[in-house]
Length: 180
Image (tube, rainbow, N blue to C red):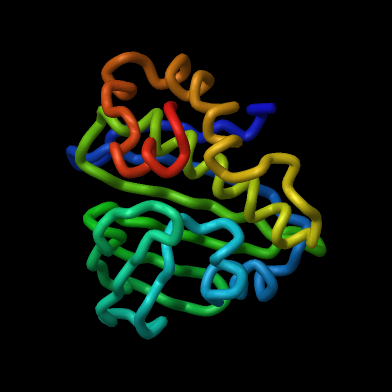
């Protein structure tokens, strides 16, 4: 199912992925899932080490892929509505706003390499599907986010086109999860 596909635009010379997800949980609960290690482990691709305060240096380590840790920085942290960080050169922005008894999560990822847009779009799609299951306390129907990534990747390749689909997953990811 790919009814929540992200979109790709260009802004200020950078590529920008955008996702909007309607979640049946209040912003405070979603905020905890975005910031607390025990919840991040279920859906976010790395750990987030460092203070949750604007300007704080961050370190991101992959849990299941033998890749070097990435450096970053917390750019904005306004509980429970805004989280923005430099994630190894990409800028990730999570905006939460109340919506009835739940909330809307608007996510943007800005980056330089257009060729990785389909790959990363499918990755964030898989992450947000895993997040929804974490928030709902239900097991995901996939063994891993890599399995969900494989299910949605072709839809992103088709949607974004060849120029945005030229970068394969990193070798270390393929070694950990099998061929794309």
